[in-house]
Amino acid sequence: MTKLGALVAALRDRALALFKRDANQNDTTVPVRDWIKVGSGQPARLQGFDQALVWVIIALLAAGMVMVYSASVALPDNPKFARYTPTHFLSRQMISIALALVVSLVVVQIPVAFWEKASPWIFVAALLLLVMVLIPFIGKGVNGAHRWIPILIMNFQPSELAKLGIAMYAAGYMVRKMEVKENFIRAVLPMAVSIAVVGLLLLAEPDMGAFMVIAAIAMGILFLGGVNGRMFLLITSVLIGAFVLMITLSPWRRERIFAYLNPWDEKYTLGKAYQLSHSLIAFGRGEVFGQGLGSSVEKLHYLPEAHTDFLLAVIGEELGFVGVAVVIAAFFWLARRLFHIGRQAIALDRVFAGLFAQGIGIWMGGQAFINMGVNLGVLPTKGLTLPLMSYGGSAIVMNMVALAIVVRIDVENRQMMRGGRA
Image (cartoon, rainbow, N blue to C red; front, side, top):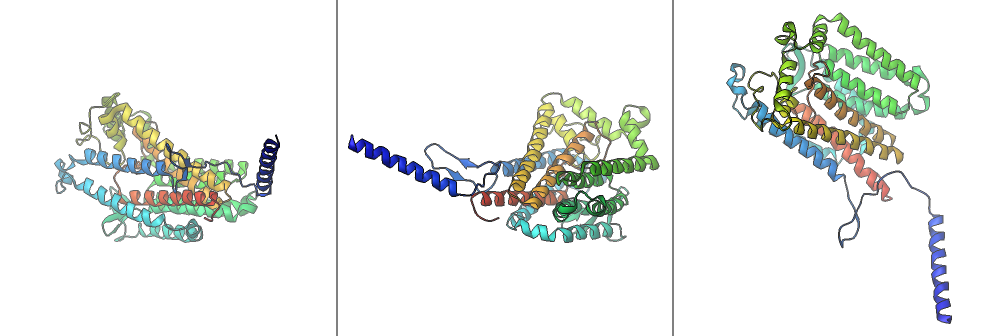
């Protein structure tokens, strides 16, 4: 009995000691996952980065490369592309992806604090490039639009850097103006001026689609950063009014709206609604399971820009409803995961990192939504590509840079949760 009593007393003393130790520790609980991975018979370990996020990004890049090749393989039959080989666009897309992967591996090594300090300068660099693209003999024009600057192995599109720049600048701006966010003049007006300058430069190219995405990123970060609701509604009303005014004063934009509303009208089917009508025909031919990979008919010179703006239509025709649903689900998961990483960073009191990650979520999810809406006839034609999938070197590179920074944010979140420093 004496031995049993001694054992009970020892267990009681041990429990009291553990309780006192836990009570003396600071409470650092945050509403985030612990990322503990337990295997059968294996000790628990903490993963260093979000592997699911990386694999989804790689899967979208790989699927996009396959579909770009499928959509562009017949283009050399067109006299406009007669000097190209059937694998021309595939090889350039592969080079762009390889370059993007190398750049992203470098970017993911850079601390987020560097991007916070450099954010104003990156935004200024984007503005200067947007000015340069409008200068003759520097900017390259295609179909009446001046959106590219030829550099080395690709035509760089400054509007892609502007999307990254506005996400960084807006996140940093909200951190700097956190104490005055209830004051309209001091908190919102400078940001509104910045968006207006970017908008004027983009509309001069013209590139209204990119302006819509940039405005959505900036407005989303302002809202998530805690700007007064009445201020947010006022700014939103002004932006909507500006878009309506631009459409009203521009005859060719009005024609696009009318064509979008009635694409089967004979007046528009062979004109402004030509792309939309053939995109809808492609989705109709795809039905549930599609015609089979490589079996699209619309890509055979019926659907213009099938490898860029209307890649989803080719996916719909070849892989059917199932293929389109998988792509939509992948982008939904990607945007949701980026927002989740942003919330984790904010919970760890890393406001810039959190707002930036959520801004990239708005970029990827918003641009994908607009592109899909255009392809499906839900939104007017805007000339926006599908992120990570459509053909385009600068777009692929800048998408990967933005996502690499978010992966770095996730890595630093995990380091802080271990008790270390970001």
